[in-house]
Image 1: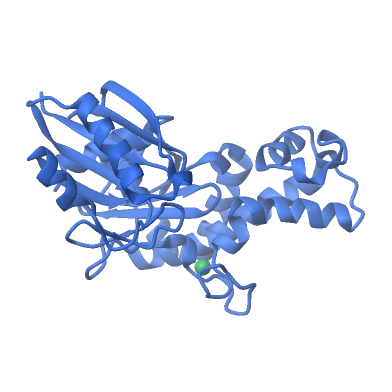
Image 2: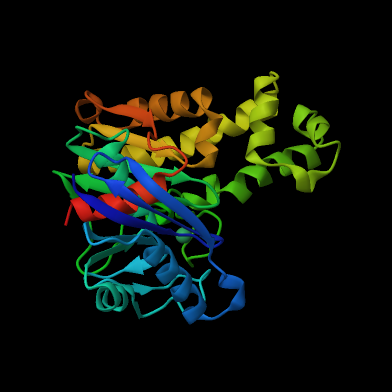
Length: 312
Ligand SMILES: [Zn+2]
């Protein structure tokens, strides 16, 4: 059976493993990224250590999922949380070191490919996959291929504007979807509600310490029947549904996969997203649409990075 090494580079950890062509992890390890040392070579050496630990001659290749924009030649740009991770030819560096095929892809596009090949998007024709956490990322698979731009990885779903007069986003644009559904902005809704004097279980759950509010706390409050928490999740669902209705009209996906920590909000979120899409997108284009939670689980980044080798 074919095997590949999958490397998932995060701001805190580099997770890596040997993945077989069914998506099973045979061996894995986790090393600190050491981004705080602020030296590119230190992070590169952590990646090299990960590969050496897993390497054997049967490996088909090495798939690397990295934050940032990745061009067609495997050069990474604009990854602010990693030191010097700009204009960095990751593909060339590791192909020369290990004499194996190396595929480098943006981390969220990588997850999308993994979900398509081994997870909740299996068997679909056109799939949109988002991960909802600190930010909102996404990837699209169309006709069995990961959608990319003219030269770069593209598909920056989080920076699709849903309100052209909306608040300024850190990307420089206004009213991007991420500005409404990113982790901090969800928490901000709860804090604003409390400051307006709304009585809420969210406040009780953190004993009045507003900086302890997390999306998980808001979910816990919702499960206790809290009205403000319900309003927050419904509004987050409507924002996402509004964005997806544009994407549904553009692409007619058969599956939308939603993953990431905040997707744990569960039924209220998924139901609202679905209802909003059904109300707003063109009817015919929603006929066969399924909206499902991500399927790869905790090691999704490793499995998905390995999956890059079973594609290109
Ligand atoms: Zn933006």
